[in-house]
Length: 280
Image (cartoon, rainbow, N blue to C red):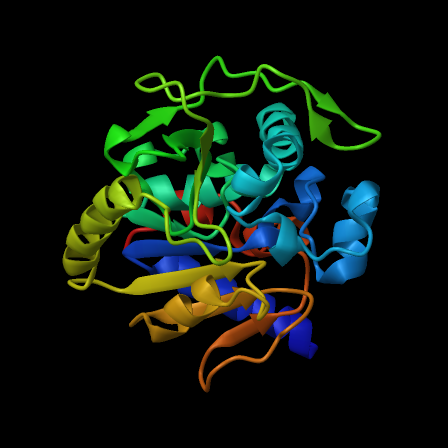
């Protein structure tokens, strides 16, 4: 058995034997669904050619809602439509099969703002979106105007320039410009109320999960924005890191240098329905 097959087998055993499952997901998780991961400037420019010469960190910045709101909503409006229209890949279904049968349950810790885990049928009360969600909005002008769903909001974007056409999303209370409830770069105006509620549920679940064996499956979490990666390393559990790049792991952890869908499919095949019907 070669090193990769051995790692896949070990991962299958860890996941099968666990009483609880923590799923950590970074941008690489969505690549197999066709979503860009914005890896490096070239990756960002391939996804958004009109922004060549700018970095993702420059465009994902709240200053654009003051400097050029049509440009800001061109970028985020296109992403909102893209995420809404994207079907989660089969790897999400595999994770859900494992997660829903754990006696101490599961939780998802993700830096992704795309809502793909909700779209794949995971319980919204078992998801912590540490950087917020593009599917919720907040007021640019008044922090006390709260957070509201983006349901029904349609932003028309010129894809040759990635500029949004008027009308743009507005605050229902004061008619000021709205923005996504996402933690951007250099962002001091992000409302964390919704994420704070998710975090409290996660803390409560973690306390309960500590009574049993915890498997931590981390997918597509790189070093550029290492929030998920560092959190999974700090968590008390058996870590399975799935990433074709940045493959280093702490001592005792399992590294699988594959994309998310390929790795999850191959791990599942190691035990098949034994994952579902295993007695812990």
